[in-house]
Length: 486
Image (cartoon, rainbow, N blue to C red; front, side, top):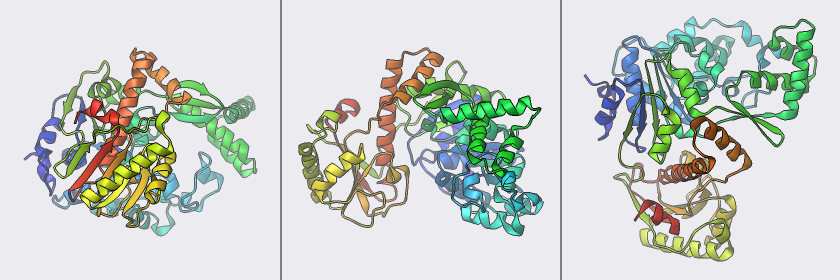
């Protein structure tokens, strides 16, 4: 039986994807369009391997995607009779019941505030419950994990090495400490891998220097455990010093090359560095993306110097339920053309599209300034929370584009300009690190990044229509036909 048969629904590409997963290659790269069933196939593959005693994990971009993958796992698990523990990676910010929804200012905050829940660490009863069912969202997990006054974060953290399948966010793959919490894995799958491009951590230069001085003084006095220093400073009311030492500690254990940008120190690991550190102890690593473009850029970033297979499933933008039209136009949202006359002409074009197709419209723009300019001529709101208006205007890479639920009657997506990213000094410093690591000049990398980021954001926005019902996408920018054809 092919493992994809565990999935209680089908897409045309599932069998093709399944054959890729069972390749003998240790490193597999897949670019496949959204909606072909990548996550479903990945979850079925992990569960199929778990039945044979092989532990695996999938790493996704957002907590919402984690919950979606867990729901797939629940549907698959209902078809088999097996004792499997399938759990998400914990987020202290989301699971802390003492500071709900608030940022965690320091490492070791729990002992610093002497949290009473630290004393309740028995997890065997929780494990039994989670082996029998997979909660549908974080709220159900909280209900199960907090019973008996337990700490939900500590419960999930303790269960990670015992889990058969782990569903986590990207940080649990890229961060060396978080990855170490998972225990030994046989299989790792990264979905939406384009999120790893330009990944880095930022640290405040003054805080780092203060933290370094405090740590050196602590060692000179015979201290050994930095965690105890952070806890002591916090309890003494020296909160800024505790934060400084915590920042220094996290900087010291972070992977990557240092670069100074203004008052910040960046730690920059390249994608290939992370892959190389993880792959040796894995039986298989599968890296997937629906938007990484061009494919050669994707391949170099994640597999340079490593034996691998690259698979491309056609359909970067189009789907059976999504019709895409690239308008032959003189309009564009280049920075030189961002003015009232351009916005007026965009608004007139959008009105004509609305009259022709007669469905509700979401307009995506490269920035909030452009969004406000076009919205003023349309008499439409700029919003990330549509309430049924006939036309709404928003931005690429915003909440709507990222996947927040919107009413199904928005069936037209207008791409008002192309979403090229802003190139900052920080971007250039990161690309310089990539240039040194990959042996490619910075200008070539910059052009590849610009195209890749633009296409990724464009596809992401297009994906908001044509999911369940037929949708229509109109791209309005004279540069588009030259890049994508008509």
